[in-house]
Image (tube, rainbow, N blue to C red; front, top):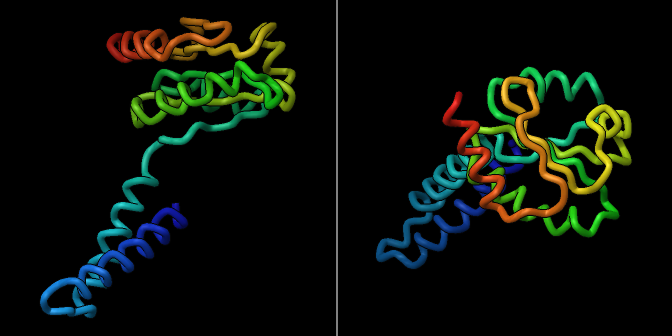
Length: 160
């Protein structure tokens, strides 16, 4: 989060300085700090909330984050070598951004967490599971259009 705020501040400082040079008053002492402040705020907002996909590698962490979650959880079982998993990745990232703050998205690399793959009987990749109140309510094996996942996520949010 600090990196996002720092980068936002830097870009804001540059934009503010540019605005000060282009403006009629050319007052860098006003525009540059204001730009840095606005950039920091934008960076903080961008960093807030569970917008990123979380990686899980063990039973305890899975139980804490997925099974105990009050929000619906979309769990993507994948592997680095899986072409179909790479094809699905942009859809998962899009859903993560679209449902930010409403759902939790978790990725599990089956090569790093074979015990979790076995526990949930993952036999093909990618496999995506939807958990609501700690219970699996939907399973997708293979790659599906984003609307298939979206409809199930919206339904899960309605019943909560």
